[in-house]
Image (tube, rainbow, N blue to C red; front, top):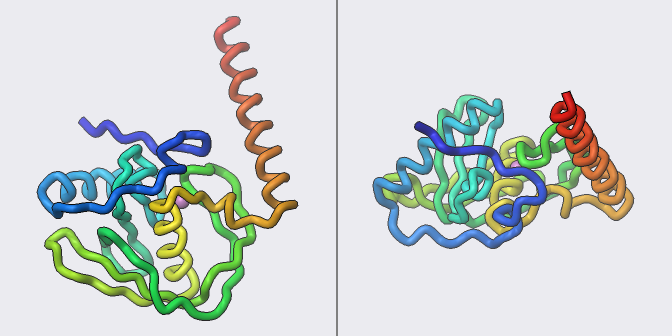
Length: 174
Ligand code: NI
């Protein structure tokens, strides 16, 4: 049975720099499979391994007609231009922010066969690569916000955490 659960803001695994994958073996293939399943279940377009609690450098995604893809030990290169857009994250559920990122990037890494791959994308696709590699570096999208946006986001996250607490307390009281 699958044991993944999407980790959310506050979980320390999201703040660590994930480790390089040294062997692309059956275990990595199984992990990627679980990540694809978790991503689909959550209606996401991309998911990085730390988001299911595994501190390893790989992410999965499916965007447009790409089909399901896995990128291991990804590196962003050839970043160009700027693009501002609404961005969300499965690990910061329900919140969306205006974030400026590079408009075009190339991501280089390895697939599950250990073959070198390189994908170039712009706008949504470029955003996805930058967002997922940020996860592997222990950075959430909250760290891409300006000071005011960030303050507001933290206030909202605190409010939600308290709301959950209150909900649990009243449920327990019944
Ligand atoms: Ni995310």
